[in-house]
Length: 422
Image (cartoon, rainbow, N blue to C red; front, side, top):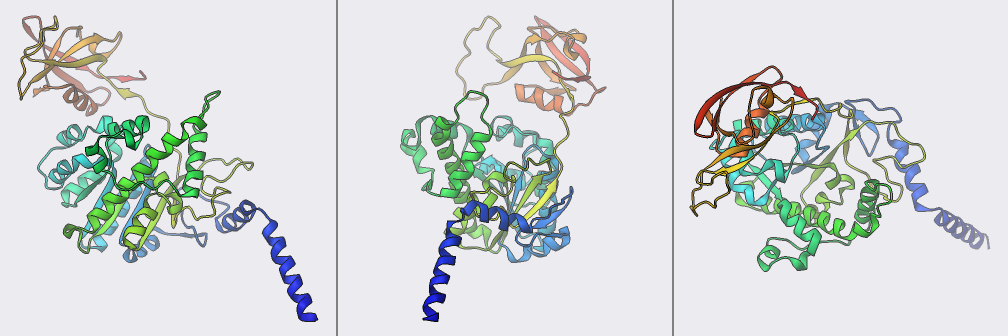
């Protein structure tokens, strides 16, 4: 009789525990271990809540075949951590590593191979991979990483689809792609419940005023899943290749693609079961006690990462140096009146100024709409990108000598750059 009573009590307790909502238990259990006080530079082992040094973090690298570093794209500290991990893994692996990067798109793999082999310049890398359109974040954040890769001939794996393909999928769905485009994609998984919950939070967090974001979710979610399955496919494809034999792979990717493991890491793991670890960078901020912790969503009962590196919110954007002109490519055999050019396989361009902004360095130097830029500091200018790249190398107070064509006359003009908020 006593045994029956004990069994009944046990059942009642079990049922009672089951009546508590999962989110409440998740919040209490997972946040209990995470440090209440964190500072910039802290590295936290999430499972235990222990703060560790980078040296202690690095000791865990040896047991992983894949190391994911989740970056905040616009935060320089994220990229400093990536560089630190890159250098440490290079040293520990005697150089036998490769790097997968979300920033580069799969059709540009040949360009990256040339970069690794030292065959192209930084300028050609950015132009040929269409960095400003395809990625758009400040290349200076990535420069030291890319220089280290080139200097040490480390293979780089382009992970993602092009921006235009993503736009087509968002607009038409996968069924709207051509047969050739569909063949470039792996099977896309849209069935992960927690992954969906997380991305619903992300999209709703970007809603503004009266705009109903819920109607946009399905197309947003599909594109996110395509990105993550494609990046996972790029990773598994490389790791199964002869070139990757015994190599450790570092993956530099947006933090949202690895948080809770269910984005890229899970999709890779179920393909190859290789040991991996994830490192998230977390921008320290004032938390709202009424809301979930950014790393610990109440309705997602998963650890956000293996390790978290605490970084500061980025400083406000500094003023920048600009020339102050609206420019476009002008084909050599195209007149200002707009005559069509002759069809040629190798078409050369010059750059024409359509507009000169008031009170800009260009205006103060006497440049005018219609001027054609022939060279800058004795470097021939053939395309708009050449001008953009050249100006980006300048600081306030620097000068630049422009050779321009104005009508039939070649003119040399000296421009002095200054800071601008525009």
